Image (cartoon, rainbow, N blue to C red; front, side):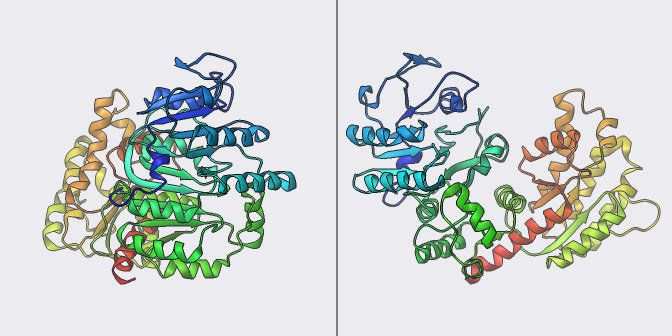
Length: 476
């Protein structure tokens, strides 16, 4: 934090963490809570709280919080709902100021749960303690390997994108987010008993390590005007993606079933609020993660002139339609580019945008690196602001024998990644429907920060959103 330290900084950067209700049994859901901290080498002290054993995963345990000899900056509680209040009281007794309640069964769990939630809320407000949750997983910070998850995370990859969630649906994607996309920080607010979306947005707006913000909201728990003012300010400086669910009355009822709060705000009003900022509203979960990946992996485009490089003429036509529908212009390649491309063109005349790979590459199977090196002329054209290219079909992958070793795989991938040398946004889309071959190739390509989308339509929508953001961020 460059300004006065925000209270959430103490959640993301604790010097010590006590984890209550942990186990070394890999068949129990709480097992990863301690394992991730140990295996990923969390940069702080770890205090497992378990009264039945003296050691877990090589770390000394303590029967109670009161038995821990050092100061505890953050407590993470995963005990049953019936014991949670006792843990909160213990935290107050030993002077813990930050608490995460993973356990569910409060405001989302009928009358009994709601009464427990009221009791807990009243107690917390009367004492100097901040609570994340209940019904949550997080905080996560890849800079110090603080990972609170029900999934065993193999490794973490740092990036500039920070996520805020009101639901644990991201947990199903945790492994890919941490190891593939890359993450700066994640804050799952759960039931938002104390910490809410206003706090999260305020923190991310001030966090120097956050370059892109992606936030999922079911219902606004904080002050709506405060949220709007922060969102309007930060979205000018940092691309901000908002996924708002609970948009219909039925959806609001569904939201209440797992967070305990009906999304009472009118969706038309919420949408109008977003339109008064530079924030981008994702229409569904796929678009949410597509946009997050695009803004993290790519530089913002200077204009909206697109070059399309498909593997079939028919798909090129459909992609051109999609571009037009989304307000993207087809670029007109210059004379110099046309001359450079003559080396890889068939004997008959073909369109240069979209440029049909299927027609051209068949004559260059023996020298694909040279073919793709010449193809760089397209994104390098002065009339092109961004480009999308289709991944090669499986038969091309197998013919080049790249499956034999990692060196050959990397050489194969470089043919596409070299398109980035043009210094402009370049993305790819899948040739089939994410087959095993494409999953592997996608991982290899995206490891070089070139995004791969499941369709040309999804690629174009992401690029269009990036271009629109460049315009809106200057005007709101």
